Length: 159
Length: 287
Ligand SMILES: [Cu+2]
Image (cartoon, rainbow over all chains, first blue to last red; front, side):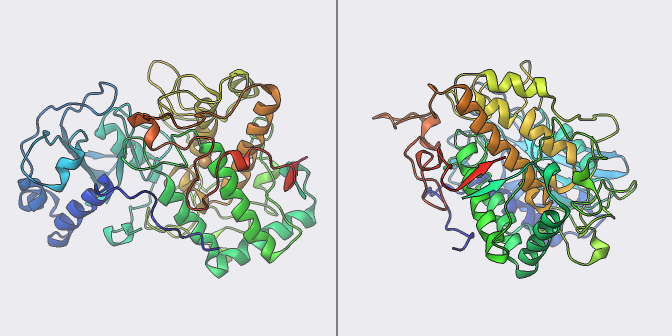
């Protein structure tokens, strides 16, 4: 048997994964290393989104406060943002996952795949068995786990 | 019928045959298919789609079938091998024979955390990792995560506490269940209740790929999950009147229940139900 199976379920809602990947690609394609911050202003995904605002949490009353940071941590440039899309916003794929903030983290300009647990905490591809209340802690934990390694370039995120 | 042994009881020859079979599977590309598969079914409990593998009741049966598939693939290479188990409450030191040169190799070196001993050391030319998470192709480990936020391996007491819970799993059948054997063993940290435990904690302790989304890239994954599988047996023996939960799907399942696999729900990608996997005594046994 082949262990590469068909996708489970038949939901038409794009997974947050897909939405994120789209945003990353848009940002990274136009960017070059070192141009992280100017690049953000030109990120079409970012300008298309409503301004960060608190919104309803997913599941059991968890908070979904928007978050934004940019800092050097252990010699790595970490950047992150969580944006809540209010329910009922104009037609957009993201509305389908309105209760979930759209999240992005980059380490040295490379996207870190972030996910969210039912209690609203975040985890990443790099540290996948422990979660954190904020994106900042999630990014720092990923840097700790990476050590000297770099994230894979965005092209390697296909799966 | 075959036997899964404690890894500490393997003979030199058994270790060599297992390693050889793993390396052959790697060379054929089949090993990496298993890595991708684990990633694909690691669905979060905020996602609106079925989640068979993690943060879910079917954590045990899904991984049981996953291990069986891996073992079948190994046995196609060498019919005499099986997946041994690593009892991390017992072999809890970096000096354990598990990490020796003739078996899985040891901890990563300081600096880049690269594993430089054993058959999976990059320089040996048989093992590369990094599909999709990091840029590095050498296997890394970082035992105990020394530094500001270290982790220790779970103890016998930690394990005993989880095995004592007579309930298999509880609603909402996800990563935030505070009660139930399943999440106690899966080990999701819950703020104000408990920190990262058992299964998750071991992933953290090893570090490198084991701590990330491509955890089967480190072959210790299989020995860890063989022990997790054995724990399910131990729990069933300790609580013969307790059943897998959730049972039958209610007439109007709630949102919690929609993406979770009950006793008779077929799990992807194999279309096998948890019920089918409760009793493995005709296939393998633990020694
Ligand atoms: Cu695991």
